[in-house]
Length: 120
Length: 110
Image: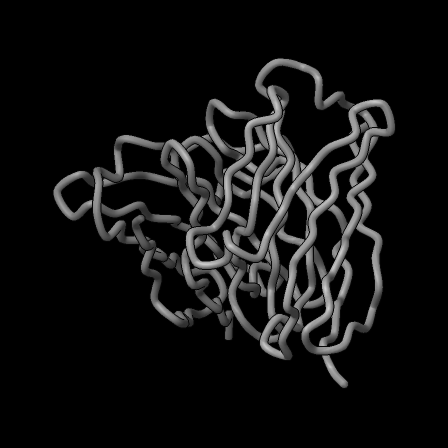
């Protein structure tokens, strides 16, 4: 059974760095073709893909946010970590992690999401 | 980079059929698979169509997907609409380095 769960602070202040952790089970990120992405959704707005890391430790980022994002993995812990620097109130959103494969980019399993509010 | 454009909202009556479009701004829609996700308020998205026209197990055959190279777009069609189909629907595709979501379509069944 595949599960993913996001964890991190519910509230961050402007200019701070956000660190989110995705802890997953039921698959291994060392399996060829496997990927984990971070996706966010501001309240009442659309989904936005942020970053992806694959089994081979290749990393891909949203063009508009790549200067602020870092994605990494700890295969032994079954975790993927996203950091986002210089947080702003417009970054207030529910942040999801989701599994996909490199072949067809279908997000077949999602976490329940974690709401991050940016406010002083 | 490319964008996926969806209508902001659609509405239809129960029992009818509705089609939601998703137009790719550059590059061929046929080059990379398109997925469709359903999202109800307060929940994570779930897949209703993957790889252009495949249904995950548990998704009724009232949901179907297609692509049209002439308009460079993908479509999600829901037939025999039920009130439970009322939700937001997102298309999604990719290229070699990016994953892209459409802006979402709010489906109202009334």
